[in-house]
Image (cartoon, rainbow, N blue to C red; front, side):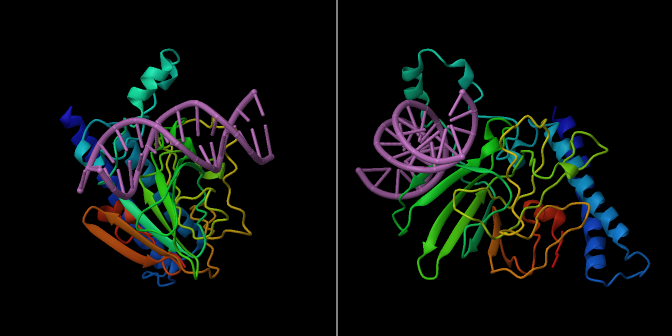
Length: 299
DNA sequence: CTCATTTGACCAGC
DNA sequence: GCTGGTCAAATGAG
């Protein structure tokens, strides 16, 4: 089985490398400094975007097809494994089992994290459900815990913590844990099934406005592989009036360049820590730093 | 009725 | 033992 895992991983890497190359080209196009000067048309950029998206999609497909392999590398992204998958079977002997099961979770300490700081809570286009709030000793304000709404229906493991760190001026620090593996239904036109090699779907979600700390947000690329069975949860569309920076890479290449308040976005991948100003770099390759280090920089 | 939030309890890690 | 992260029952909102 290890052989299959290696093979898939190699394919995934190849796909990511291909995407990186496309991203580089795309950056050149966007910067208006296309070297060969022959392909600065919007359609070319669009094509590049599609290539990049396809790269992500295929890569994820390869990786997802072998969830058991390479557990050291991706153990923290348990895409399809819901810790509560057995809950539905536990209707009887509830109270006693509940007590045994409560708190039986794995903490995700070494997981990749991203941090954002902003003057206002961030709306990143994903739907979040608050599952806890805690007074933190070293902090003046309680910390709020959010998980992806699709944790159970799609096994999305993404979580985030939002904490107000400053009173004057108001400053929120949002820390993201894990990748979104759920399907963002807000923009179905580009949501395609990553399991299908001919389709592509990726959201790179970086945004910096969010109406209330309890609302939806998420800065990650979101991939998905499940049918749109979620009914009432596709309201996560970020209202244009309150949020710009449509982290969503659509084939329309709609990158909002409107000035916003500054948000510090940083990512940590074990030993690596980055900090960028999102007003300058709308896209960060945090997730795929190794393979995608120059991924995109849109203004 | 369904889904989100609140909140106290439970548990892992330090 | 303390702190912080998560669970899940209770409650509220739409």
